[in-house]
Image (cartoon, rainbow, N blue to C red; front, side, top):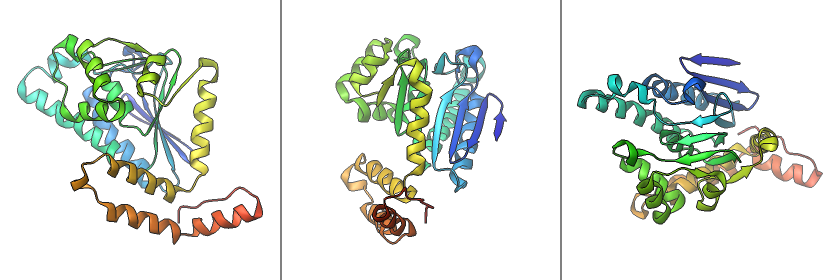
Length: 264
């Protein structure tokens, strides 16, 4: 099933939801309308219990997301009011990523620049083709890069690499991105789609309650100690042990068969 919202597409393939930035003529540069469509797509995936993993990708085979659509800057970001609206809209899109409690995988094939890197960093895992390119060109455009985006970058690669990426505004190849920790894995082009499918398929077969508890624990670990809700993490862990899936997992192990998890 495929749904189109302007230059955004969503697809459902069994237990996998796919959100596609579909503006290949501009290397999937993100317009205001595309940011506006993101929360509805991700919230729809969140509400569908059959979906266990979400993949984010770009259309066209040349770019994941190449950043903001600069052609809109004169109309959508030309004054203080317009810029404030743009920032609220893009922030709402990022919040939709943050509140999704299902694993998010960024399938990066090509340019992953500026706002595209912010989208990738909002995902739990980032798998890149060997031809991918990364960077944040804000310093070449005179743009201010907000704290939320900087913190996500620092949390991922550390302060030294974050400074280098932001101060130099240079592009990095996939191997450099892997060495910095921007991506989990770099895959040759011929193996890229199969690698994504294998990874996502394996995750979709695993116990969803366990993955949700683990995702929440990692998110809490990244917060200041005084802001952590460890009680919520413990409640999710206890839900795992009280679930039918825990019984199924033990039974399947003893019977030497693949478990069939139902998320309950």
